Each structure stands twice: as C-alpha cells, then as structure tokens.
Length: 96
Image (cartoon, rainbow, N blue to C red; front, side, top):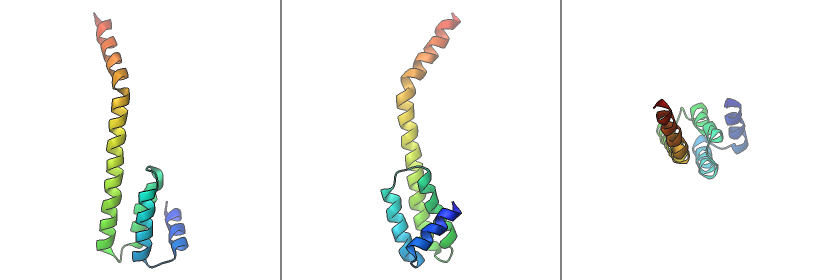
C-alpha cells in the first residue's frame, strides 16, 4: 500500500493540501473496497504536518468504509435471510 501511495504522490506532484483535494475527489469517484484503503495510507504518509486537514480526510474515509460495510452486511442479510430461515426450520424439524 505504501508503494501505491508513494506513486500517487509522485504523479500528483503538488503540495499536500492540493494533493489531498485530488485524492479525496478520486476516493468519491472510485468504487468501494480495497482500492479505497490506499487513501488513508496516503494521509498517513504525507499528512503529518497538516494534522487538522488530515484528520478531516480520515473522517471522510472512515465514514465511507463503515457505511460500505453496513450496507454490504445488510444486503447479505437480506439476500441470505430466506436460506438461513429454511436451514433453521429444517434443523428444528429434524429434531422431532
């Protein structure tokens, strides 16, 4: 991940404040998942001198990750609920 963050920094080649705006915009436009884990690493590597700005960015990233996990979990529960319920009922019916 550090290598990808370093490459992003080299390609953007701007001061941290400007680079962070670009990285935040990229984060909004990319799909969820592993690819978005690079952005907090970018903040970790290059944002130490800009604590307030970096903490705001990490808040955005954290919310996005938590929000995605919540919706994914909910989707999986809804999708597999019927299958789960059938298995539970089958287990109880086999006990008698």
